[in-house]
Image (cartoon, rainbow, N blue to C red):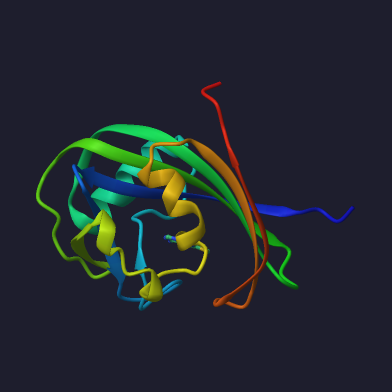
Amino acid sequence: MSLSLKKILTLVFVREPGKILLGMKKRGFGCGRWNGFGGKVEKGETILQGAKRELLEECGVSAKHLESVGLINFEFENEPEILEVHVFQASKYTGEPIETEEMRPQWYKESEIPFHLMWPDDELWFPYLLSGKQFEAFFLFRGMDVVLEYWIKEKGLN
Ligand SMILES: CSc1nc2ncnc(N)c2[nH]1
């Protein structure tokens, strides 16, 4: 059993009734796609603190309460590193979203989410996010555009 390297990441979606805030990634991993806000968890901070920090850094929104909504493990074929992504949503926050070097924020109606300009996994798990169902999921990617295998499980409150 090879040592599977895990990278802990965060992903935050800001919500308003019938709307969700997405960010157009302007550089780096996932550039050119509408994403959630988030990134790495730094030494000495909790996953929750990392999520709040990344949201503030990437679009100027300060989450007052983050709700854990999902846990997704991403594997990429022939790569040893597994991305463990902790997904949160914020409905209590301060600050208007602003564009940064990383992200261009935009509100989308939940009925008009631009899945064709997002990671291909999103269309599969967004129904859980949008319906407030907690979930766990796994996606095996080939490159950046093809999902080879996946599963999604609804999670009761633990
Ligand atoms: C690595 S696969 C992935 N799916 C995603 N969906 C939304 N925002 C991200 N940053 C995502 N990354």
